[in-house]
Image 1 (spheres, one colour):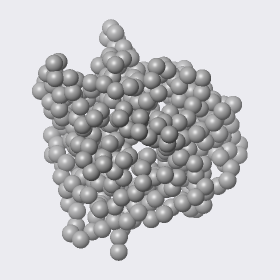
Image 2: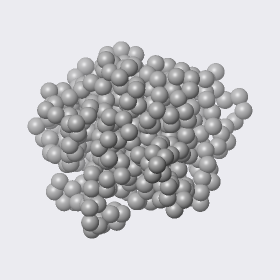
Image 3: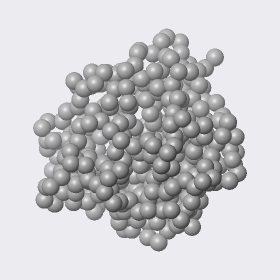
Length: 391
């Protein structure tokens, strides 16, 4: 997140939160339709009490439960709209939480129903390092076994407490992806954004079905290159606070938090590795370091908005793929931690079209979530809201 915002809001337990520049102008189709006239949306309460700093929501395929990650180190279960009292997992004693640190996401294996594997992304209690670990659900499907933890990958992050990234998820190709921030402070003083020998400031791609604890996919873009980590899929990210794969279109959407002037959304083909999003040479579509900015080889964002109207830090969401609101099918939704708005756009022919401010605001939006039916949720404060069609 923006370093100015961290200083102002550090007491909040839920504060989390480019050749020439080019984009995928000839990539996959957008998979959506223009917004119908007169369509309105609303935010319906889904869970209004009982949660403590929720930062992520997801649902495994064909599982009746919805899982919510609490920043402090617990994963909670919602069944039939009711928050269950017993946590699915509690590793709070191992998690350093507060500011942008904590337990930040969970990813269920595509074969979770049979192998019971799930993966969590958190910052360690000892020094704030980033860890991704695999856990296994027990014979009691309502409770996971914390003793089954297996380290997948770790990245040092003890110098500064911010820009931890935080999302681990499975991609369209079955690989495990993780978005890591640049390591913190403002302006990337550690230089991780363009350091290809660092895991920070990157999107990682791992094969957790082979190797121990993982294999590096042979088609990762930097495999075998000197001073470049093979785990890297993309580089030049400041603090990707949520990214999303859209299966029907084969697109990847990344919301990357800016410094002081620009917030951005990037859209590329999900199978396109080796993309450099430009930080800290670029901030959004503009030069951040004017003395060295050439823009060569960097990816320009599809959306770039400034810090007007109270905006400070983008919160990325998902492309709507549900059935309850046909009018927004194929539209990507996002918000801002400070402004709390709900906005969307549709990606078409390399541009953001049908850009829409839905006129809905809520408190600090920490994350979005989606269930396996494609319906969307907004996490704000200690509540979960569901996006629904207005009257």
